[in-house]
Length: 308
Image 1 (cartoon, rainbow, N blue to C red):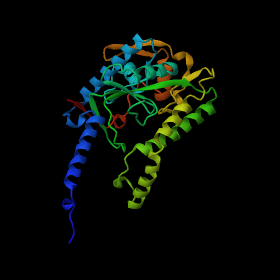
Image 2 (tube, one colour; image 1 turned 180 degrees about the vertical axis):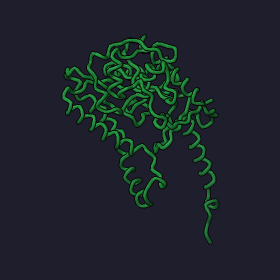
Image 3 (cartoon, rainbow, N blue to C red; image 1 turned 45 degrees about the vertical axis):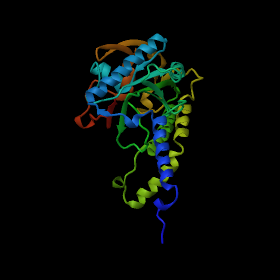
């Protein structure tokens, strides 16, 4: 005669205790979010939240005498649209490396606001698998499509460093190529692998096994990328740019003198932009005032919620 688990003396008490421990863990680690209700935000509400983070960031930088600039698509939106690019839904800024490190040192200890959390791969608490800073609104929750990681963030803005870049064109191309290779490895570790997108079940299983090993190196890859971006910071080459992440490639390199502050209007408010924004935007977009074809007007695949 087989003895069921329920027939084991004390089994039900042990199971009840395990449930209590699990509930306590949720309350302790997840800050009670298990009991929070969520309201889905529209794209306009997401943009409003991002803009609010940007205004708080701007005020903090002014008060602490830190230099920053709008960059990437956010700077393009500022110049071409005086605000968000209509089909875009994120905000990017970058800072000279010294100001970037100071910003991290201050805000990792004392947040800008209670709900604005500075997170990166080297954050003392709640680190994330990215080599740069994300300034996150913890009163929201974001679900990104196609991400393998189960960690949840709130709505954010990206904060990246400006570092010294090599003067030699071939050397500059090589360092961006190396960053691109590291970024591909990180993307592989973070991207969800599905059977539907694999040639067959064997390819799927092989990718899953490979990804298991890749996930163990996520934070090591982030550190490699961060260290690589600082390779030339002890030299005066006359060129700077955002190498960390290096999404736009070698065209991000600019003469150092473009990184002086002027003001640009973004959604009816002035923010800091590079005085040489034309050189920067042409380096990464070419004729940046020309609208892209409809098929290239794509936004990020995120769903966001307000936690209440």
